[in-house]
Length: 221
Image (cartoon, rainbow, N blue to C red; front, side, top):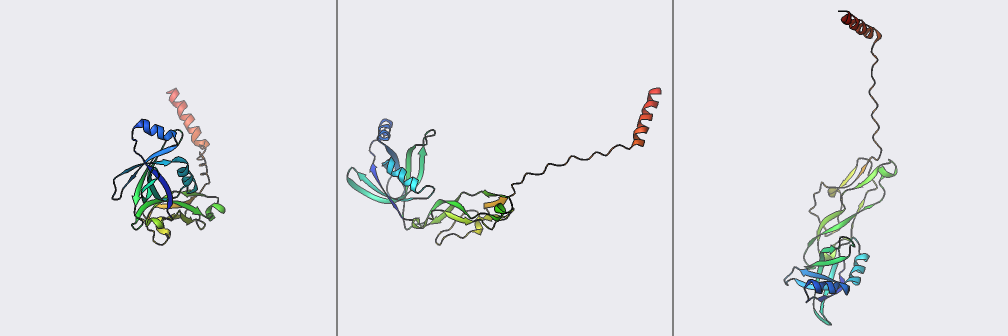
């Protein structure tokens, strides 16, 4: 995975009013953590950042952050997104945390899991594909992070499953995920047949007559 360049500005104003003014100017406040440097407060232009996120939706992105103070470039480093904070109503990005990384050191990231093909148990057996594991924790160099993990589900019949241990990861990529975790399975989509009501044996006429006679004698007594 190639680094994506992103220019950011040093943020010197920290108060809530200043942050609100910054957001009105269409900037997003953020912080860069990790590495040998102290945390750096930055601000990011919203539109370029959101455009990158749309183009790489669902992918782990390695950024090459160019840190400016006005027109002066102070430093640059590689980073990944640590956390995004969104407005609960509008879903607008409110704050971004980045984590500095080294391109020469392995990192652990989450990668989307994608199903490929149509399971035979769905196509011919009328079952349905159950997607259980949507992200896989992988360990690799930042430049080797796969955009997604493709899993061929076409051979799955009803009752079959694919576990983490069953897939082959790209070269240089490994995982600490539980190998027994199920990623996909095909289950029957047929409704359970209604249980047939238990048949009630008719009471034999002879026994019924004897019960009636006994009841009549009790009344006479």
